[in-house]
Length: 396
Image (cartoon, rainbow, N blue to C red):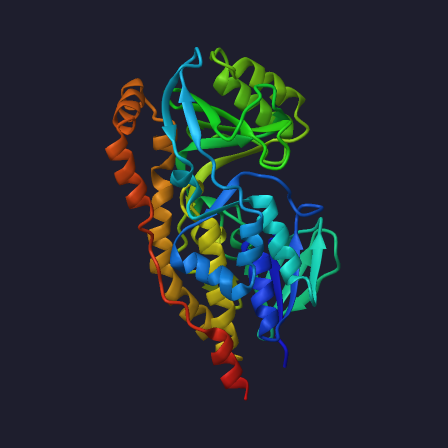
């Protein structure tokens, strides 16, 4: 019997998982809260053999290379615009960088054949039975699925409903990030430009697709804040408060924030879930092991989707065994990738004047920067089974 799988989330892990499950004969439905695919967004990168092999197996590596940004170098300046420090593109951009929205589009198109997508809806309840999972939706009629997978990010709705409240699993790393679009009034070229104060970064860079536009990248240190994640005006007010009174181009950037139709704003967090499945419900990507900013979450999501689909296919009717083997293969690798996210905020926006000056002095020395670049290329890897042949042999 063909298994019917519901996947929550249509960003990266969700469409990747839908594609692979389709290759193995599963029927898959993807539900996404947003009314359409989310475009734009910050660049995401892939590093190391494991990431690139998973993309190659999926058949999207060449297309992603066609849309890569070429990396995002950033030049740090003081309040008068004088040069202080430069991070080269390869430090942040890995081996392959692409805008998150472009990546989501590639994966969505690749998964489309025989995948049902439901946009503008979300799961409201999950009830596991002996035969499957009864699912209630905000807008659609209730349905039953054999399996449900949460691929819906650090703030996973599936994890909340099936595993417990977010605060049990998500740890705030002390920073918030914000991105919005504005005219490229500075006439910026390839380099982004960033201005630091203790615990704050205000950066702006040319849009990779339209040189007449630019995108901000703001990072600031703060304890966990209480706000409505879906309220644009609340988010804008928090950003404006954090950056009030700063020099350089910050006043003009904040003016553009007031006029921006939308702004991405979220905490920099890490998810640590003690078990990635419960019964017929599982987690993949950031929902299971996310680490925003520097935690290689996009690559981990692609690899996790590949392994989860393969193990579920090999497990046949024993979904528990499939979930267990997936987690056993992935957990150590995911933990090693997550470590990069623990310190990224502190590197980009050191919390003290001393820390900021120390970073600028230290990283302005070329031999040290070369060493850091060399170390950044040393990423964890795991062998990827050829599930395609294994599943084929099993079905013959």
